[in-house]
Amino acid sequence: EAMGCTVLPISGGNTDRQLMLMKDMGVTVIACTPSYFLHLIDEGMKKGIDFKADMKLKHGIFGAEPWTEEMRAKIESLTGITAHDIYGLTEISGPGVANDCSHRRGLHVFEDHFYPEIVDPETLEPLPDGEQGELVFTTLSRTGTPMLRYRTRDLSRILTGPCPCGRTIRAIERISARSDDMLIIRGVNVFPSQIEAGLMAIDAVLPHYLIVVDKIGDLDTLEIKVEVTPETFSDDIKSLEKLRARIGHAVQRIINISATITLVEPHTLPRSEGKLRRVTDLRKKA
Ligand SMILES: [Zn+2]
Image (cartoon, rainbow, N blue to C red; front, side, top):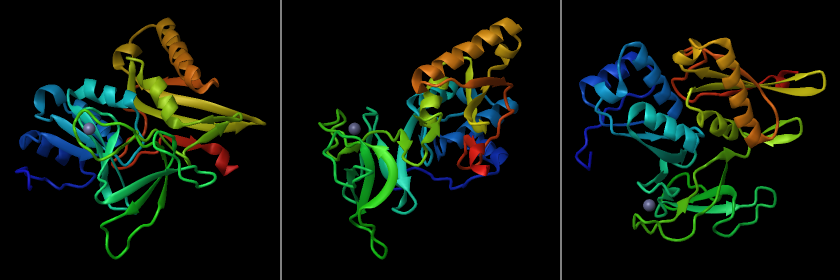
């Protein structure tokens, strides 16, 4: 509002109404989780709304969920918007602790309010700028419930050197993983974001996937269900098999273990109106 913008606070859910308001009011910027924006695109498509032609949307500010550079590229190519990354956490202030600038060289931390540190997650010793570790925040302006060296479990590093945008507040590297997101599959450490990066690099793959980890006998199994474009499904079995193999190789190259790839039709995997869980670990039930 201070910048002359009209704000439409709509909260989550009620997707039809969101789409109608975005279209009718000519909304230019949206802020939500990346998975909810994907859900909006998806529901829009079903109603014949083309984000590029029918919406005035220019920018998206997405956060509260881990998402990759590859997912950003997918969202931008589907909608023609510029997708920005915002970082925050409920315990500190909610959204707005850090945000990327147009140079996308990490996310600038609003250092006048939040003091960032990177620590070794095992020893908790502070690490120098440039080294990867767990992000820790101290609030500088919060009253009532200040936070001192609050451990986020998010893995990042503080970037060194100036940003071409001219801002002098430091930036943190885009959060690629949370220390408690890590899966151990057949003894190998796997982050869901690594799988996402492999999947999203392939054109025929839609930004909807589900990772299922299970155990058969003593062996961990990894299945990745992924939606592919309707055109792909009209192809013959041989090309589908080829695509399945290509996705399998792309993922294996990154995580170093093999996965069973299941191609599914569009609109068949779970969607989210808030934060989406893309990992089902069935081993935990055993
Ligand atoms: Zn910058």
